[in-house]
Amino acid sequence: MTKVAYIITGKATQELVGGCLLNTVAAGIHGRTVTALHFCEDGVFFLLKGTDNAEKIERAIKEQGVKVTVCECSQAARDMTDKMVDGVTIGHFSDFYEAAGDADVVSF
Image 1 (cartoon, rainbow, N blue to C red):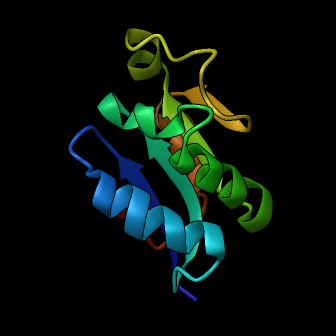
Image 2: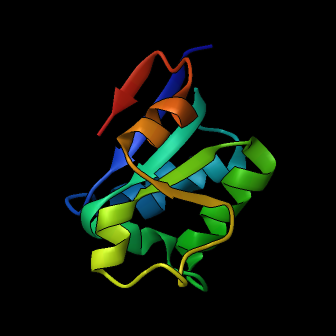
Image 3: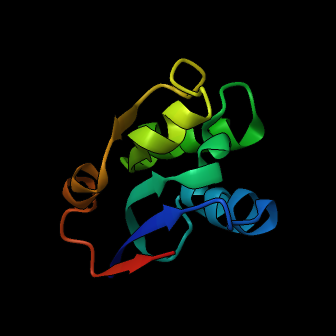
């Protein structure tokens, strides 16, 4: 099966990410193996503890083994360091590349 990794930026919409992407990934019905999710710019707000999106991301981490990374600069600029779900790696693109592993496709 094709492996995919996603980069989620501030241009991502609630409908696309919170609805379509995270629902299918968390439920294990995405249709492809999702290896990694990387959040940057305003996309870091999808990781905010206590939100529906954060719960979906936590399920994806725990149940699907998805590796989740967040841009160190983006999360720091938005004061998110202690406000994100557990299991997220704070880092840079090199951390995302490692998390994405052998993904066949990287999508924005």
